[in-house]
Image (cartoon, rainbow, N blue to C red; front, side, top):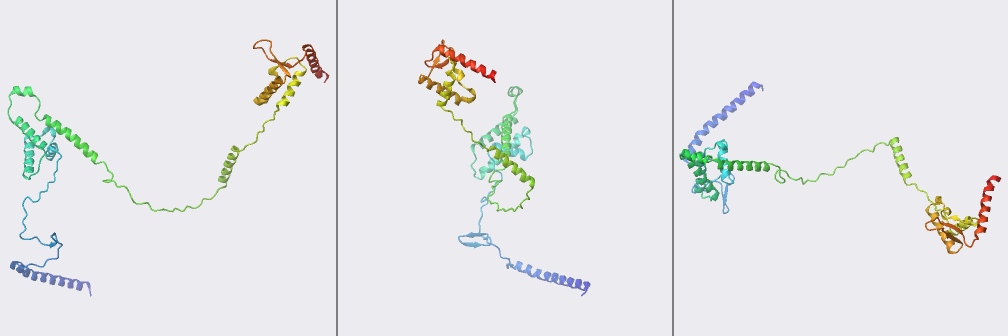
Length: 323
């Protein structure tokens, strides 16, 4: 079949459907005129009363005119209502028309009263204040009274409105800050376990040498050696002291000590001298108070001791000459 024949067949089908629709339209209009219900598609029930399902609105249902009232604007007080009325007219607070604002305010109060809403006392106080300002603005005043009063009757109201607007703007800015569980929600889903496989890197010889140097450095830090204390005997030191003072009459007390031996050698020598004094083998001699202390052998004759000292010094001086 060619394309032209196909188009001709489609046109015939469309014309046939249009003719059938025009033939059914008078029959449907006649059925509506006789009051017979036209077939409707099944609908979901819109109400259920005591277990009975209603899909159509009952004909004898009575709905009071004030059964439902929807008020979209909610105000936090009389100042909020006044600020709303001013903003709705795109006016500046400093240029408010007290008469218009008072009329709109009283209309709102009367509306709330007609709906049997209980208004707070502050709304009525503001209504009285607006009425007073309106009367003061409308009533003529003598020039003397204008000079005495001076201030605009709206000044106090304008100051209160400006202060309330600042606080309201600050509250709105704070309310826009994101809050937890309102704008931000803490994530409670657990992160899936991820296993990452990493290839082992190649070991370079330089890295091995660096590791070896670190080990050697730590080994040097922990290297230790044993220090053995020199054994010093008090008895041997007593013999050495006796040998020193045997051929001398007086030996200075400080000459018996060898500072190179350290504190231990000094203590051992001191104990040896004390033991010799205790055993009465040596004597400690001092010519006067705070004079140097000397040591000599106990019971030694001064003349013989002097002769022995001279002989001892002569031998010590002759030995280098002979050598």
